[in-house]
Figure 1 (spheres, helix red, strand yellow):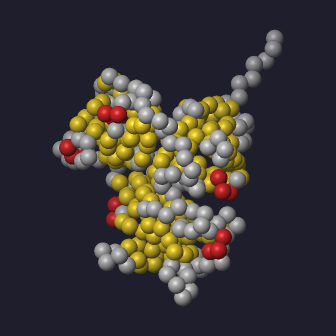
Figure 2 (cartoon, rainbow, N blue to C red):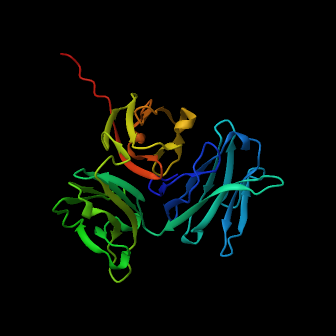
Figure 3 (spheres, rainbow, N blue to C red):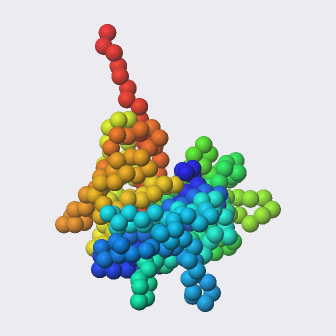
Length: 333
């Protein structure tokens, strides 16, 4: 999977004793792929799982079932040991946007499941919900399609993309407490915002400037709080050495049932699994509920592990960039 045909998602979790019920959102660039994990309780381990699309009358048309796991560009894989099934959709187009459901088939009763809102954008994608601490700072990555590498990027504020107020542009990268940096090779531009105030709460847009056409963009909601940010990391920039390991501490401010570590353009792993594989990299997640922090350790690092990841807890996300450096050996003379 191309890491820049990315997903930013709030993971779907089936209702039940050990999961949360809510509408989840997935934002992904067109042309790419997305893998959505759907977690479920122990009592559903032997049940058939499915993925369906809702229509205007709230009916849900099944697309793929775990007992018939491939349908066109959509596939499903169930892992009862980890109590999760994953739905993978390839070659995404804007027409794939809509309301979907991760479901569990229940004989003689109402099927259980949660709603997923899939939004396939045509050019830009970013995180969705962030809560930040007053006077704090944050860096937000905005990914874009290859065709926009030479275009001017900008950050604006407002409820609507077409009428939002520009704050900073990549051809004039600093404006007061907001700065922007474009990395065309990685097809990502980053916004760094310092010294938050309550007046900074609101909807913002990552946008690309298009001459003579509507600018493509994607939104993020920022909420500024006096107390805990409810989800934070010690550092958003983490450096490791090839062959070694790195750890990231994700602090959450209240009790949540699921904590996730995700790689942009890849998949997510949950603290429920303890030790898991994330796109070929061994990952250990340890949840310290007493101190409300889950610690992610990635082992056996390779240069290809360099990139953006994020912590997810309670529907909030915080991005983390990991840089893997080569081991440097200096010979003694």
